[in-house]
Image (cartoon, rainbow, N blue to C red; front, side):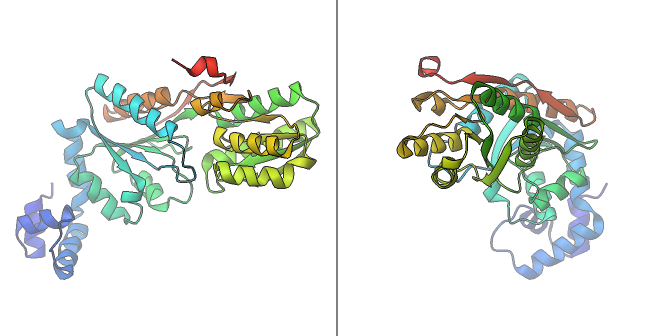
Length: 329
């Protein structure tokens, strides 16, 4: 197995210098960094270093990689639930956990990202909020350098599992329930972000539902933004019979706009966040247990770390109407 001593010898520098480069220490010249990284690549040092960590007593350290929702000023309840559920299950499985925000690593190359996680003694990663434009993360998953669980992204290989609800079926369930409760012939569907795996599944569900029920479907992307959903509702909802939203925050924005317009249109959301209970108008929504999703992701990552192969894990969802009385304590 290639060691850090071998890298130092290949690069013609001290072992401490190699360590500084791998751990992104300041005050190391670009020339020295280049020499060290050339040696690392020639000797294929990073994968071997990670493999060693996986087989050592340090294999119980995992990272939660979270992409924060910057489209709202509301507290990101979903991410807080993710963190809470993961920490609780990690404690049960005796795993050490660190939290990494995507903004910290988004400009890294694949090798830089692998070195970063290796330097933190990370053996497994749970990725939240990944989309199909996160090219370096896709390469990281394909490399199978680490054991990885992705939440709500349909990516599976021998070292990678996917955990989440069936978003296709859940979107059909909540929209169809709302349509049945109201006489509807046309739908304004406010989708999430264009590059999202989940958005693609939900749009496919709405297209299939509209075709099945012979309804007119008008789709616009709201980017999970309450403000953008409000603007889209002002612009398009007057000539539609129902507003279906891909998130509760967007449903709140749509409902508030309809109230200001002084017209009634049924609105449904998706997620089941607590904020829905304070809106004043009950709406159908899909209730996800985000803490349980995250706990299941940790459980699945622990399974991978113990030698099992990746798989697709589907979790249940339910339809609810959030009431104020149900959320206060």
